[in-house]
Amino acid sequence: MISSLPIREDRKWYYLGLRHLRMAFRLMRSGYADGAVFHAYHGYEWVLSALIAAKGYPVPPEGWTTLRLPTGRVVQAYPSPQGMIPDHNAHKARIVFFDQLADRTESYYRDFNRLSRRDSVKASAPPKIAPCSATPARPTP
Amino acid sequence: MAHEHVAVNPLRVHKDGIALLRDRPRDSNLANPRFDPQQERLFEVLHAALRRLETEFADEIEKVVAVGDWARYGMDLRNLPFDDVVRLIVLRQRERPFSLYLQIADRVFADLGDDDILFQFRLATLEEWQAGAESTRQRRVPDAAGIPLLARTG
Image (cartoon, rainbow over all chains, first blue to last red; front, top):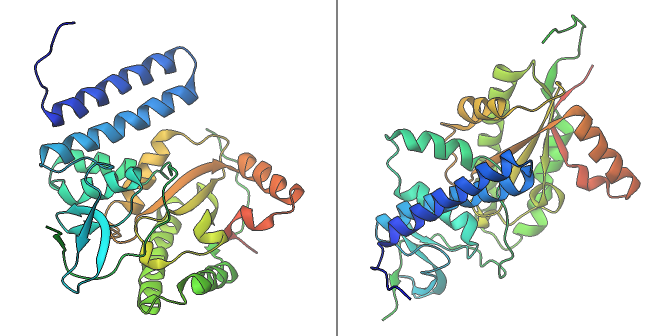
């Protein structure tokens, strides 16, 4: 087995995104539109993940953790630039995370905004905890 | 594509549908102390998007329907923007090109300022909609067809 150099996390997601996009194109040309949609969607999500990783955050579902809020309440969430993302669903969390991290003046944000309007796939997820309106939380020691 | 010049009923807000949609989340929000302002915020943005659809795409749209769990069962508004808030836009034409999807995304939703809600949509042709509606009737689950928000009424 040939050992490989470690790959940067953001590049890993970006390459995965390109790989899924290539698969989507091939499936589309072969007449498998449903498979093309599946891989195109995953290509889209992996590109979102690349930016999340590039900004130094773990890509959901990684990073799900327990937080103690300033009020003393303990919740589970993804720590994010705007406090926290309390939904464990990785699909929606990546979209929300990207929206918080993206540069809205860049042209890619327009493409993201267009595509995020497509009703998203809902993966099976544990029951949601209703988010509270507390200020950004601090990780528990 | 040629269009026949046929008088059609105008596309209007479906007041009964809006009222029903307002009533849906009440049971899911009994423990939500911020229900009223969140509800107002949701419908403020909803109406803004519906106005844009009426203004920009009246010729293309047959109706707009709230679909999914938020329309069928209601939702705890504290779960926004993570719960799906989806509208089905039923087109008058026989195809639903991706270019139209992009136009609607750009001209209706792009600067809606709904980061706290995240409205999403999908397109359907009238034929697809009618097949789906018939299916819900046969399965005796009319609620699954959704709640009308914009419709062509006389």
